Amino acid sequence: MDKVVNFLLENAGPSIVYRTKKEIIGDISLKDEQAFQEKILQEKDVKYIFEHVQPDGWLGTCFHSRMRGAKWQDVCEAALKFLAEKGVKLDNPIFEGVMKAYLTRDRMDPIFDGCGK
Image (cartoon, rainbow, N blue to C red; front, side):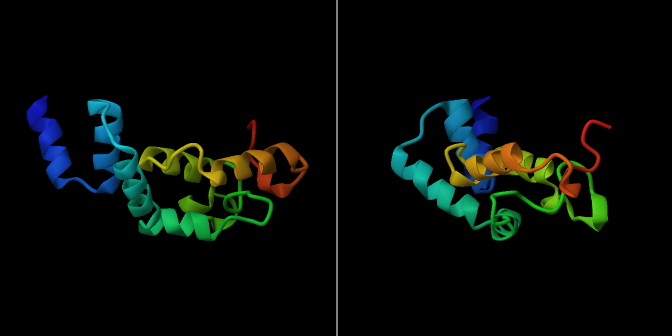
């Protein structure tokens, strides 16, 4: 296992190195964690998601279907999963914003098309 972990630490991108240190090794300094978060937040698809947050905190144009020709980054469910898999910390305000939007949006809003079907 050490061989695999060392390979990841030496060759993987910021998200994998961060998650390897945090979740597999279980040892990451606050300074390193902050540095990795900064790098992760600069990745192309992560930046796209953050740049397309709606005013109420919603991510994208639909909840969990690719309606209206949405790219995967514009599907709220997919964007949330992606951010979590990339290692964006759950205390990032983007997660609170989307939950508030989810809880306050009218369920008849077309953004929920496809929910529960």
